[in-house]
Image (cartoon, rainbow, N blue to C red; front, side):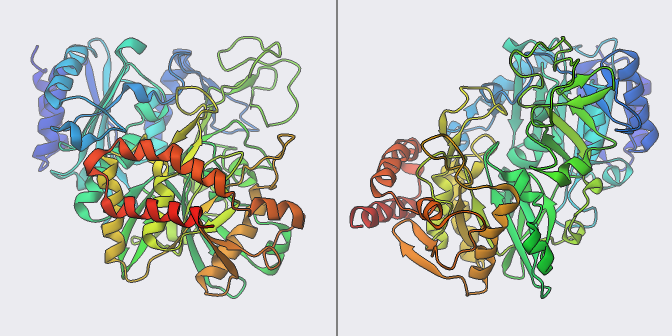
Length: 593
């Protein structure tokens, strides 16, 4: 069925001088066949209209306007609550280009299947079009995209986490990323999140949740962006970034890759211990989730492509993350949290005592069985509301990076902190990163999985080439950041955390800043440089416990290498030879220890 002529006229008028955007929109409008098309300009009234529509349809609930002004609760379908990696595809011409860590589908096969699902799928519905910018508007490292969706919920969230509107419309060029999202019937058996990196195209169907549907986030800012970054000689990473400023005014840039629930957000939003704050230290946020790293001035610099947070609510409270709590108190969309219906307040595990009356994340009366809020419940909040936002967030080049952290949630083996012996050894540390699976992705909770650089679900091409790309970037750097492995989650024989974590992690960062200045005392071990217990600021942690946290378990590490080796072998001949050398050198150092 041909697209209505007035749609074509409206699209041509809206995208005057942007033939690539106009033709793509016309192509998919004809396929989707909506009753109407609305191109969003990014003004507040449009957001209010979207929220009003959702409320009138009973799909979103207004929260207490005094406690949480302009904030709402949305409940997703119970089958649509997390990233579904088994439904996520990289569609490149060659299977080898996608690599063994990605699900692959040939582009033509994928398009044939998806276009059949999309055909007339928006008949009787409205197509919302959102041009957007990722990154500071005046940065040469920012990127543009356009999302087409039939979901007011997705559109409202997109208006928070990306810069939607006229500025993006003006910047659309032949290299923009196009995202097509269709809710359809939310059939999990026909759910696809397909990426075509060679075409800069994303198609997502039968989902209305988070990273599956908010296509500017993981789909564009990581999967497509990582593919493009390799071509452009930069890096797009699943990394937080923060700026530490010492009492004498010296700035340190810290970025870090952590799999889900491994401490990334809490580190990015660090609340300093009183003794550090009292001395004049400052900790400010640049990014909580994604960092694009460019090479300017011979060093790495991080920009945050996003304009808002899409953070995990469960476990967030005044103790674990007070700055996040300050941020979410207004203009926030909560997804799959519980509700105190008498006071119309959101609630989740970790927030405090359970209210007398509580509705769980599906709207049912909560009787104490199981979790009231979904473990992957979320908040979508403008980043401008964050109380300690670094000025470097707005910088077109970004935050100069002194240190890169890799950290997975591990109960045993991995020390509190150690430093790589070299850039190549640091890449090995990142490539060996393993962590316990969490509720953010479907699968068995607690299972230890390989998650190199926390990018396994998000790398848009073969990870063997990705490791090589890191190596090539390092060769172009005049000043390489030091690379560290951290682990806040070691437990004792009673299952208790041995390190207090949260703000106390500043004591680890302090040692890292000392190392950046060439002052921090360290001992060389087979796995890397470890702090000396006598000079390390351990806070309230005893010397005995700190010694256990900094112990190198030779047999445990040899077993870890045995566990990781099959994963590396899965890449076949494509796996870098220089990285195999680093792997075998590490084994040799341990065997001689």
